[in-house]
Length: 314
Image 1: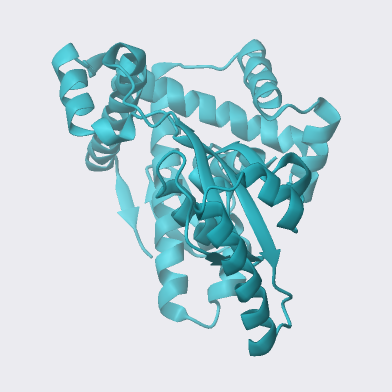
Image 2 (image 1 turned 180 degrees about the vertical axis):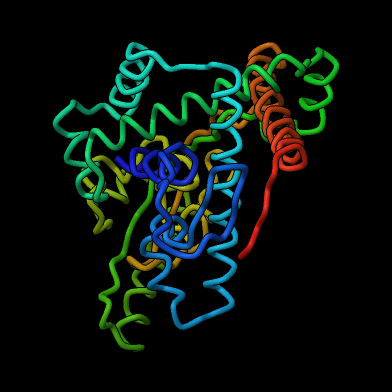
C-alpha cells in the first residue's frame, strides 16, 4: 500500500488542478493570466507547515520548493493548452487500472486509501488527468530527442559492474544459547561457558546437526539448526556479518546477537555472481533513458520560464 501513498503525494505536487480565478490570498507568482497564491502553496504543503511553523527559515524553504513545483505545473498546463492536447476517459481509466494492478487492490480499497489521505476519488482522477497531460507535453518536447546508444549502455555496465550482481545467499546451521534480556554479568558468563563447551565439540569434529538438536534453544533446533538460504539483510547484523564471512564447512567463533550466543556452520553459498550484459542491457537502457528524460525535462522547464511572462513575488 505504501506505493499508493507515494503516488498520491506525487500527484498532489505535480499534477494539474484549476487555479482559482478569484485570489484568496497574496499572489506569490504569476504566469501570464495564471496566478499562484500563498493559499495554493499552503494547501499543497499540508502537514509540513505544522512541522515548520516555528522555524521561519524551513517554512520559507518549504514554500519556495512547493512554489517551484506549482510553477512547473502551470507552465506545462499552458503548453498542453497551446498544443491542443487532451486526455481521453479511456486513458484515465487505464492509468487507474494500472495503479490498482500494481498495488494489488480493488476499487473500494483505492477509494478508502484516498480517503485516508483526505482526497476524494473524483479529485484524484482530476489530478491524474493533469499528470497525464504533463507527461504528454514532455513526451512531445523531450522524449524524441533522447538517443541511448549501445556504447552508452556498455560504458554504464562496465562502470557499475558491482550493481549488476545476483543476490548472494547462504545456508547455515546454527546452535543458539539464549541470553535473557534482563541477564546480569553472572548469567551471561554462565551461558557463554556452556556455549564454549559446545563450540569445542563442534570444532573437534562432532556432528553439528546432532549438536544443534541436543543443545540449541532456537526454533530451528528440531531441524538440526538448519536456517535454509537467506540474504545478508534477512538476519540481524551481528549474525549476518559473522555468517557471511565463513567459508563452506567452517564453524564460527561464538557470535553474540540480541538473542544470545550463536555457533554457526556454513553449509552452502550461492548467487552473488555478475549478471551478464545481455541480461541487464534492457534495464540499463531504461535507467539511462530515465536520467536523460529528467535532464531534458529540467532544461525544457527552464526554457518555458524564460519564454513565459513569469513573475515570482515570494
